[in-house]
Image (cartoon, rainbow, N blue to C red; front, side, top):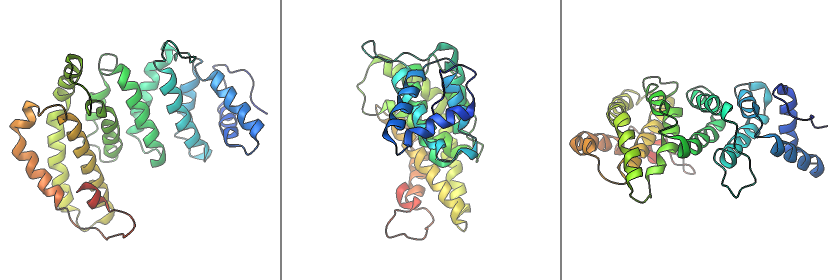
Length: 269
């Protein structure tokens, strides 16, 4: 039985039940659950409640369902087209949603949830960054020194900064890129330099080395996004340092070879 009309006081267990019913083998139950969630997803307090489910390890498969549902609601309702039937999300929830998304990318959530959170951040940033989300990059860059948060932070940055790839040149794009470079170009070089040193030191620790290689690959992807339109002045001034880092990345310490799956070293190269 589905829960009743949504209110701000809707209990966690009721929401978990509704989300779980979306994968019911019973088509009628599944369709009813989907219709229910669709009709209530833009009510005040709804998405913050969905977000509150993600850190709870007791919900099993509902974790992933909730994360995908969150991303889909944000995609359709953060800035719906005038011709769309979707209602916009309430303004009272938006700051809370943004703050929680960043917090989760910097926390030890299950890895399977991180891509949905990163994509949600990227969708919101498309509309709100930088003018309506000025603390986004400072919040992420502040976590560069936290090894427990770094992979999630770089995944988020990679998703956000793809907006500067394969885009037509315009004053608006260059204004946003200049702002982004001002916050990111110096700490990104420092991070890349640090990862190169850590990579060499971790040669004997396969698990640690794999993580560092994955982080280094994400740094390269962020570099690509920032340099796709043009070679910015700071990167031009420090091109020798970057090329030295890339040379090290091309010759990382070896990992055991898996014939079926590329290693983290091969992905970086």
